[in-house]
Image (cartoon, rainbow, N blue to C red):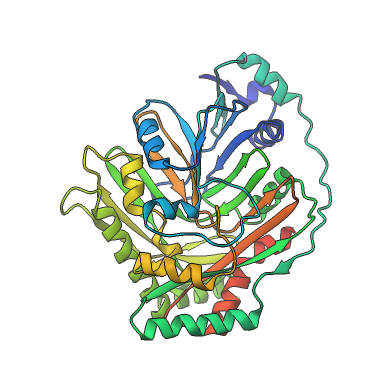
Length: 423
């Protein structure tokens, strides 16, 4: 990998990254990860861009875990996505709703070109094109003027139906069927004309997060502003950071402090968070050295542009034989997006939701040559099919016996606020 100083290139880091992303949009496979330099326990995503036009580099479809096993020990760098529907290969489950976006259950690719960004430098590596030629193409890429999007949003679930379903879910909780269930709804637009990179830039600026990303696989596009980490492996250490608990930001520091304290001391939010922490501890224990699972931070309150979030950090020491494939079998999908107990919650999700989650509440991330990896939870995101012009975003909340249905609906709208404001 060759490294270049932005000062020598007479361009600042932000302008270069923007040019690089617009230049890369023409490729069939594109993965961009941005930690937005946000302070975060165990850091956020590395800032990198990976692209490929090769048709045979990636894998997708059935028998994903056999393919994951192969790449886990390949000694190469991979970028990939894990759709929520991969649950059907983890457990005996199914997805019955129509898929309008077209992401596969999983897909990974080995980049032909990779760029790694720091505050002062960019590193470039390529397998088929001269590094200097790539640099020239990026520097001469014009950033297009912002173009208006043509979007008319619809809700797939009415507020009345949402409230009715929440009450049905609470009946299941009373019966002991589930303890907590993450229930989500979809807002969508048909015949939407959007410019995905520009839309991602607007979303990332409006709501910068430590696990933001842009992923394109042919006509299917993800624009992601996620604050949540699913799973990271650093050496033999596993790190999971589930989010449960949300409150809006204040209009001034005094109101901020009041709301932050309100979230920290909210018994319902703490109960939700604790249930998922217990689920994550159990998931990680299946890949961990005996006695190594540890809750490093419980009920941490983190501020983002739009909201405060309650985030806990659970770690473990992975057994030597564990790799990406085996660890995902034990942990996917993230418990914060299902509920508890996990399998029963996913069955009830399929019963009450009227949309296919697809990549939403799945994950995007990367696998390093040494076997380390980092994956987010795909929330606060837009999905788009450039061929059919179908645009979608999904939001949800954790339903417990103490939930007030009307408040849960308002929480969904709060989480969608940043998306609605850029669309």
